[in-house]
Length: 114
Picture (cartoon, rainbow, N blue to C red):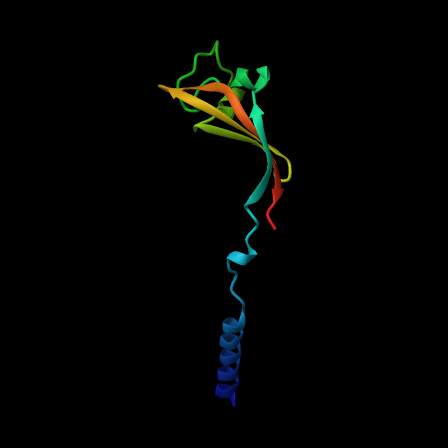
């Protein structure tokens, strides 16, 4: 009797494990959107000020503050914005360990894909 209860319990656990649905890609959050408009954009003077170098490079204390280091772009593009809002795509050029804004970019309004 004891062996049959253990076997029944083990079988129930195994059956339960097999019937649990596995999570697939369908359950992941949506990551794509349609671009509803695009127009040229020039970063504001405020934006131009903090784009001064690459995080991790050597900084002169007179030029950079500690707070700025986390906001310095480390790639050719910097995207600022939010889902269902406006995305600013800035384009940069690199020279040595510095990143310089090209002072042009694109302003995108986005809507979710259906």
